[in-house]
Image (cartoon, rainbow, N blue to C red; front, side):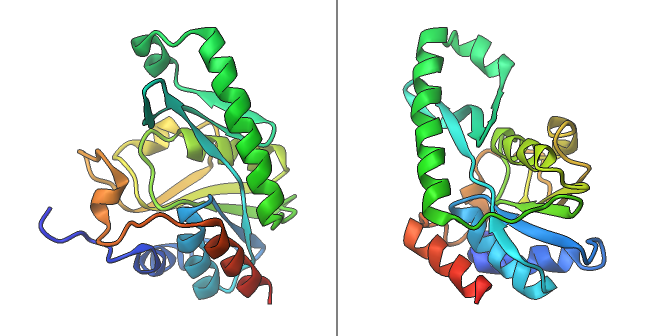
Length: 210
């Protein structure tokens, strides 16, 4: 890929907002997945005139390879990737220990950001900066379903082709700007994919609320 299609997360958010225009009901809220997804979500919320909140999820990383997702956790929700777990022979004791650690981080982030929106009966538009395995997105979508959202939409700048099948239990609709057949890493599709800190997430949420 000579030139990444998105210069940064803000550019991706603008492109995603264009893709969503006319497809989202007025009674909707945009829920960004921290941290990077909130940057994308803030642009979507601004461009579409919708409220911005967060749904805190965090990936469960594989033993010795934290970038490889074996599942994800959201408040009250845990999803696992059985095929990945089986291929890595992940033991129950390690999985319990990792789940406790990630659950604590999810609770810390939820307390840090605090931007909870009641999505009962509304359309919940879950936004991340991209989807690889789909575990994090599924956890977010299932959380929104348990929160009573009337319709749940996954909206991302980039996701692998066929992602709808991976997340069908959590989302009614999937909208992606790009759906490559050979997606290996979301960061490859961005010119700037620097890490996003808690301070930036809080600032975006405060700006939206103000």
